[in-house]
Length: 97
Length: 231
Image 1: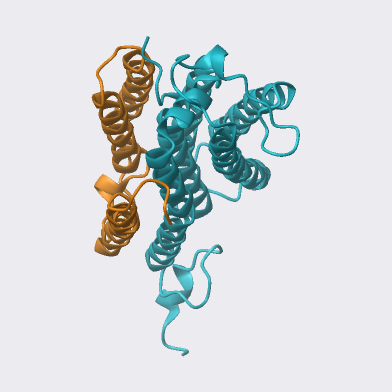
Image 2: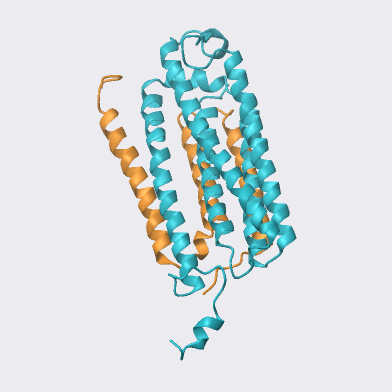
């Protein structure tokens, strides 16, 4: 099996989507959504990252299962690092180490 | 073995002797690249974790520091990186079709976009030096200009925001410099005609690296520039 060749139209569509999402993030930042400003910004960033991963990085077409294992492990380790650290620091009095 | 001529006739000059065939070589190289990117996630992850904890502790200072960054330059740079990701994706496609001229053009376009990004970043850093927002003995922050007058802002804590800003954007820019250098080498070999539809793994793997650096910036932009922009 050789590598999948992605159609040129799809590349342009992803490119436009990424640019539009960038515009939306910057625009939404000026609207007061309370704590949801951060949530919206991170959701859009994650959406963009997923688009890049799946289409530009060809993860959607990867024939090797091991690639997905590596990607999922990387995300898992990152979330482990962030979640356990925050679980610790967020349950202490402010600024005490 | 004298009775196996079939193996000799299918041998691609780019194939290393320790791989059974080109497909196995490509898969091994690709998996290696993804493993490297997993270590990069950990590398940047440490800084993102530090950012998260300090932002949680010193939110008013992080918001005030974030407001001094130029949101438009940040947004334009995001767009520049996204365009460079497109040229990289298209260059992999050009290599898959063995279009040498198109491949070289797209690689040069990628290098130029990378340099534009670094140039804009340099302008932003230079203005931070002029405003004395670089952590150190000369650090100075005028709280009233950028924050609510009734919020207490501790300049020491703002220095932590700017330390993280310079560390994260600096390491990201270092990755960009390495990427530009990588693509410069690949452009030379592509111009020489080394890559074709049977062998384009270096283009593909450099592309994976470039897209990864793009993803890091996709997160850095909202985290550093857009903390508290609401009116």
